[in-house]
Length: 478
Image (tube, rainbow, N blue to C red; front, side, top):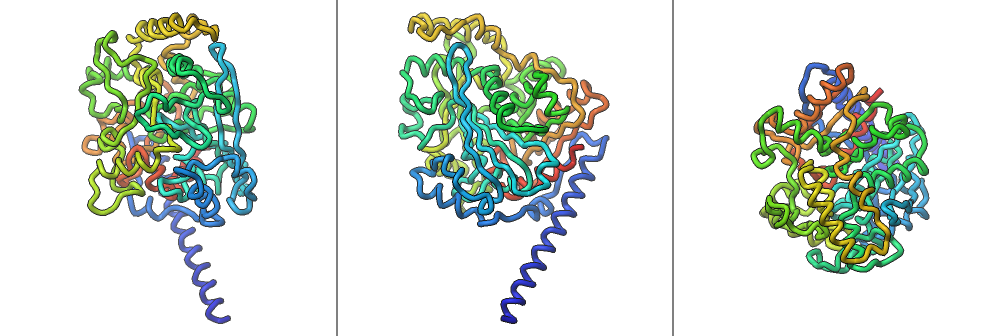
């Protein structure tokens, strides 16, 4: 009995010590963010690595669900039945069907309502996937252990959004390179290849934004803080164009490997005289299908860019990856990653997403001709109005940059998409932050670098620590 009591006391002391360390690091984060003169600030690795908290069940319930499902593609609807006391939050799987371009689309959200009563003081944290990813990436790691979203939901209300097409119940059976592996734009219906090809050209930012707004307006209340990872960084920026969403974001922005709106790519080239082909700090699209410069020779617009190990080895698969083993090369890590996530992760990206995100508006005519050709070939039984599509193209070139009060970009030290550790002032995030400072001279515009050698996928590399660091940033917002 005495030994048991001693063990309990030791555990309590360790918890108190850990909590105290977390408080001290949070104060350090706030002090860094309070500096109005710094172009960017960094949190040192020891401080970052000391952060984090545990889950009520250690994450076992969700891990067991994932391990029992082929390829880890467990059904998120099963989470609805798990008691909130077990998870630390109430999980609800939400599917919203909406209509755009005279077609129905499904967008999904995993809503995690925290048990912590303090969560009501803060905005809903909305996490949106970038290219090729979906809800699983932000909910479990590559070994099905607790992911970023699970840790965040212990302190905040969280909604993990998957853009249309990137989630499928049970995942994909088809090989990644197979043309039969197509997006699940409707979760309850398989479409013809002809329709998939047309839809692959129609997943514009305006289209996704319409579904995102419906999902958030119907299924959350109160303030919002949107994090669009990678390509979905455009969604958080576009929300500032919408009066109803802007009333709920209240001039606040939080980025994680998010970059800025595509309109700034050409602005940067004009200001700095740096072409996109020369720009080492410009966000590359690892794993995508490269295309010649001449539009007529490009990969057809309806063809999906498909992920592969070679692409991921160039900048995504590094030594904090959960699948890394001593002696592995970056290519070997990438091979393991592609194999492990071969079923539940989409592993493809619509070219229209990359083109709009990249900001190459000179391709607008080629896009229109590509879609018109497909519609003519099929007879357009869906009644897609090409004028409506044309008006939506490159919406990110018209993103409002004013009206912000607080903005924080966060980035991993080894995220080559967004950071240049050898010469930080060349990083795109520095340029973006400075441009927003010009447009919002009275706003608090900050750029925070997490110093561990995390890549663009730090949320699967160090999810526990990243969740606590992100929480501290959220608490910094007023």
